[in-house]
Amino acid sequence: MNTSIIQKSLRLINRYNSLTKKARHYGMPFLLYPSEIHMIEVIGSEDEVTTTKLAEILGITKGGVSQITAKLLEKGLIIKKEQTGSNTVFITLSDNGQTAFIEHRKFHEKMLSDIDSITDSFSEETINAIQLLIDTIENELNRIETEYET
Image (cartoon, rainbow, N blue to C red; front, top):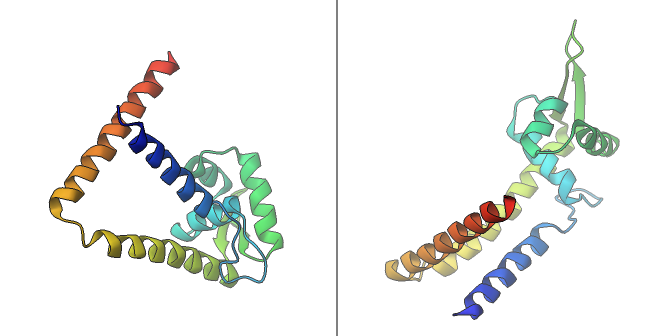
């Protein structure tokens, strides 16, 4: 049994999570926390979005959405617009919110580009072996998850 591969894989996952879960500025003079920037990412990816839709996309409660959007509104990153003749409130990004959205995208694009430039030197055989390993581990984790749900 090669526990070294599993241990290294888990370390890699933990390192990635640590890197992407840090508060960052994303072009703002203040820090944006992961929950805030992920909300900005969803809002920026949609034209106009409601609290209900945000909760559905992010898999959190509407109360959770309200807490995060209150912080984003206070920081001047979103705009709430009531639809005339309706109780529906649409949420969009302000200019600063758009800046944070773009900077967050750039962060991920650079990280992936840097990793791609390293793996570009790998042979097709090596890439296929790595993909097979990842798929096999993912399938096993899915099986274990299903087994422990019952």
